[in-house]
Length: 484
Image 1 (tube, rainbow, N blue to C red):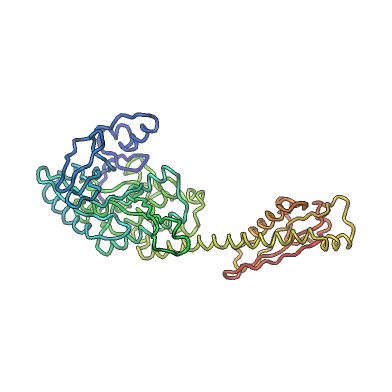
Image 2 (tube, one colour; image 1 turned 30 degrees about the horizontal axis):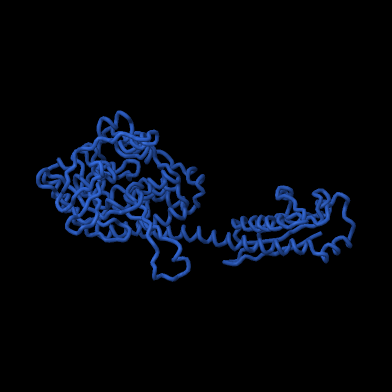
């Protein structure tokens, strides 16, 4: 049975549910409102903060020089501060759970602690470790201490530098899918996977690693934060009814089942990961809406805006995978193992194309230089001019490169032939004393027109470069002919 949804507004900038009358009236969440304000002010006023206790258990919240609490971020579930574990003397990220969750009574707090213990047992290199969950006895305040991850969120990165390329996005997805696989083994579901809950972490290379390239390039690692917090706050293990205030997550990145009382499993996180990858590639969200109801309706009735991905030059195979991850029905989405395998295939395809492009450029450059040297050589020039007198309008030491023929079995590899031709043109055009016809002059001609002499007279050239390209497994075979 599907829960009856009330009208809940969401921020058009980040897709977060709007809490409080102030944010709802202005139509944006507090974070986005502050961001807009900071963009146009040299010295913005401080946002008013609720009084924050200095200490919760063994954790002391750190403060700025002006005495304000060192806030790291805030969302629907609460506010996160930088704090110090006074026992172990290490910095932590301390999340104070919002009061609306705290007020649900002793049973809710007991469930919070039960789920928290499961979340704290998760150890994975791509998950920010949860150190401790606790409840402050004086007022029932729930909190959790997590590994402090230095860096920036993926949302911040995209806002700062723009969308990411496909290969970087796939590398991020592989790390997150590995974290989801580890969480699934322990029965954990994140429930609020989104760009703001994924942190970029730049790690220095291993000084003892002497392999080529390792010493000069730092590895970029992504860590998932807030793992287990959302599940600990759910009303009941199998219920997310909106009418009971049980929805946990960010509507713009939430799966369709999160808006109902259906059970939520790892495929819900896979949906959220798909929406997150879409944002990384395009800077936009796949389904838009000013309210939760509009987002839900879009998920079930509107087609995905695939044009956004095509405009971002995302490979077709990766597009197909994203579409499957964003399927409305959980069963239609890949499981974690299938997702990982398909991501690896997408990555391999991109790398193969890059390697082929490099080989192609090298081969085309070498062939072009050899062809240019031969055209300029006295031996070829004497041979060409001795055979027949060139028409008056034909320039000596001139060449036109005809379209190359694709002999590969896979006709989709036609771009190889075009790439070789372009590479040869680029190299030949660099030779002094040689007139080279522009690519557009011969693009409408066949690989080997019937009357080359007539074409040469029309174009004003004495020599043609013609050839073919064949891709055989990992090899590229280029056949080049000089025709006068």
